[in-house]
Length: 299
Length: 206
Image (cartoon, rainbow over all chains, first blue to last red; front, side, top):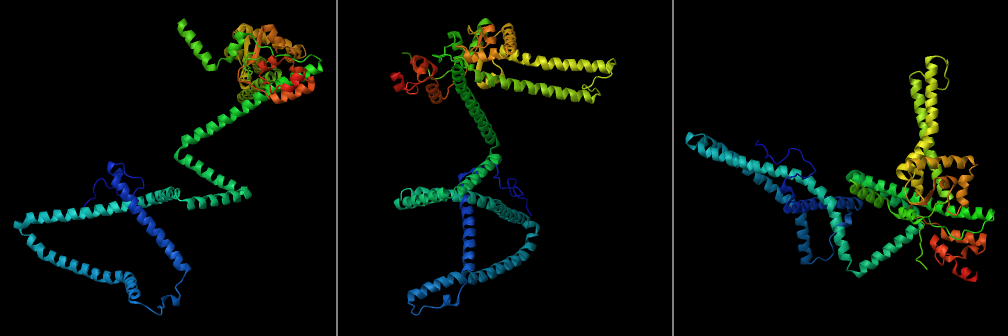
């Protein structure tokens, strides 16, 4: 058997190959189409089987209507042909293929002794090369199909619901009835959620968990930044709260103590000297900048 | 009338803020001292030197044990001033003051030198020895200075955009001083009070 071309790996991997060809628009489109077809047919088959199991065929289903026109009979003929046709066609096709194979084998056994004649050796080489090329092409196709099928299916499973929902949402935006229906459903759901807050909490929990799981798997740096940011902001909030409460308590304590000591109320909180005020109102960054400038000037 | 100032950044810091910073600092100091004591005791016990009981006193082990005890005692007593003076000099604030958004300056706006920081720490001890009156003086003094501040010519100010619960302060001052607090509206604006917060009607009535 000829060896497969180098660009085809022996094992299938869901990660697309990095060669530029894999990212070409044509291949992407084909993957989406093939995947959609596979995904769609699988889903359709699943549903039809489920429906057939839920609705077993009763005897009355096959009963012909009392009056059948020619048009109705033609329709029935076509429907019946659709069901029975493939089976009827496949049998002759299989026997045709078998006959062809036998004929080719016979031809091969007849031609092979002729090709062994030294004079016809170049023709034999050509024949072998042609046969190898055909085999190689077939193997390449099979290998490509083997690799692409699950990947296309995975792609379609992932993308198709999003594409369809986006398309539906886009289309429904311009339809008043749909909008009304959506509004109605949303308000109903909101009312339900207001009555059952525990379900909303559970939903938020589930979505939050999923999002965190996604961040953990796909973007751990973002999760780390998020946790750090939350931690920092929480610490900042606590500090601000502590500080502002302490500042309020400063004034409250003074008021009480002054009342106890029968001292007059503080008319004003005297400001510190302007130099101190200036220093205190400068941000730390400014102070560091000024210090660096002064150091450079000194140097 | 000048534009009202709504934040208290740069104003003298009050007693509660400073006490909170002091408590935070001393929690840190005692945590460090306790850790060092525990770790060193454990390490000495590993090498067979029990520093709880230095016996026999006239042996090499006893002498070493006494020296270790003295060293740890010195560390326990010396760490608090070392920590405080170091941070005052290097950063104009200790970690506790940093958390509370406070800074220490000299009254001329300069930062504390080592000598000034030591002087302030001595003032600290004096304030403590005066039954804590030196610290309580912060509540009474118009510049919110304790004895140690006066002794070292320093002050502690809010180094953040400090704000207070003005509504609570106004209500309380109305109860305690029956409107007397509102005689000088400019002063309230300087403290960060708006005309409405200060109770415009009461002010007119008084």
